[in-house]
Structure formats: structure tokens, C-alpha cells
Length: 311
Image (cartoon, rainbow, N blue to C red; front, side, top):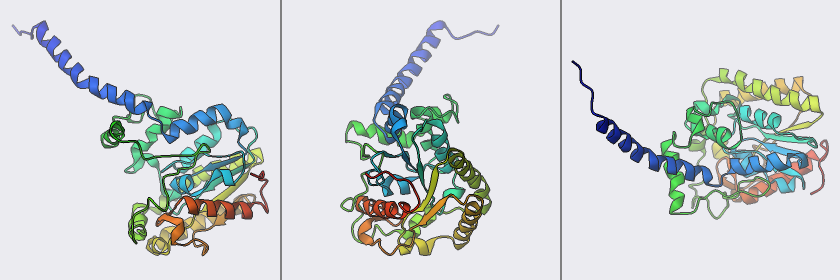
């Protein structure tokens, strides 16, 4: 006759499992309690999106590269590091923006090909599920927990010993990319390294990205909003290391979009001579000083066609 372990055995197993899970649960609670840009942006938009007339969307090129305060007193940046067009479209549709007039969206050389969940930083999608009430993924999926990305989870736990590095303004701009904090010497001008990190060989992925961009353009047209697409400055070393085929494909896709939607504005500063080494944090990100220069330049150029309130 088959025998079963005594009840005491199962109790010991349960106790052992609880001892293992308790610190993980405590860590999960602690990490979720930390301030982060997604939580801050959601809190602002949930309470004050009705005040916003200029909305900035995009990835780190927008998060660090555009200063909302210089685009108007009611401008706000909902951009985040590695935010993709899919999530840009979601933000625009999810929050009520009754006074919105202008949407500024940075369009990087890799934007059309990138899907957050498919890359090395897939875990960043959890910020939309955990902190912004986005229902793309179940709460019980890997995107519903901090601990499922164990290395970033441990890095966030390190804030118990040292303060977190990320800082952002009340209007949503990332503030930690400064001239003083960038790598010393010429190490910051890492064009080949940054271009390789942003490379996508499968150009067919642009069809999916164009679908998201079309959604954004149609949303803006339906509401009478001005959509301004912005290519942010890049160093010569980055531009030289980019895939020529991908750059050409992006330009072809963008030209088709602009033909279909003549009201969309496009501002290309990727090769702007006004930006020098002192304006960059690395090869494809501006530092805080550079972001002020770009924002003033964009404001000047947009003022000819867009309805922007004076800051």
C-alpha cells in the first residue's frame, strides 16, 4: 500500500517556501513603492491631463532631449526611456486631453522597427501594467511583477543603500543627462556602439510601426490636433554607423505618411550644425543644455504653423 509523507513534512515544506517567498514579496513591495517616471507621469495625467495643450511623446530622445517648459506653460512630456510607438498611441488615447492642441512625437531612426516586448529591455513594459493601468498584458503575466526581471529588480533594491539616479522635472523631462555627468574625454561619443544597439536588420518590421504611427496621425486628424514629428540631433559618429538601408526605409515610410497626412509636420534636426559636442550626453542623446537648445529651436520652427501658447 502506497504511503504518504506525514502532515509534519508538508508543514515544513510550506514553512520553507514561506521563508523563501517572504523576502521576495517584501522586495516586490519595496520596489513598487519607489518613485519612478511612469508612476509620476500617470499621477500627473490622471489628475491634470485636462490642463495639457502640448503633449510630448517618444523614447529617451524625447524624455531627455525636449524641455516641456520651453514649449509652453501647459506642455507635458509623457515620453519614457525605450517607449515605443505602440505605447505612444496608447498614452494619447488613454488619458483625456480636452485642451490638447499639439502632439510632439520624436521619431528616431529605429522607431518603426522596435517592439518593446521583443527586445532586451522587455521588462520595461511592466511599468505600463504596474503604474499606468495599461491592459496590454495580464496582471498575472511576467509584465505584472517587478521581480520577473531579476537583475533590474536587484538594481532597484540597491536603492536601500544608495539613492536612485533617475531624476525628472515636474513637466516630465529626464534631468540626469548633464554635461558634467557624461563619460569623460571622447568616450561619450560612442556612435558605433549606440548605432549597433539601435539596429534592426528586418526592415519588414516597419509595417507594424507604421500601423502605430498611422493610428496616432488619424487620432490627431480626427481631433484637429497638430502632429509634429521630430528627429533629434545625432553626432557624426552615430550617423556614419547607421544602417543605410534602414535609414532609407524610414525615409520612404515617412514620405508616404506625409503624403497621406499633409497636416503632419516634420522637423529633422538629426544633422543640425547648431549642435556641438557640448550639447550631447552620448552619440544620440542630448544633455540638459542641448535639450534647451533643441526645444527653443523647435519652438521657433513650430511657431510658424502650430498654435503654441507662450511659456
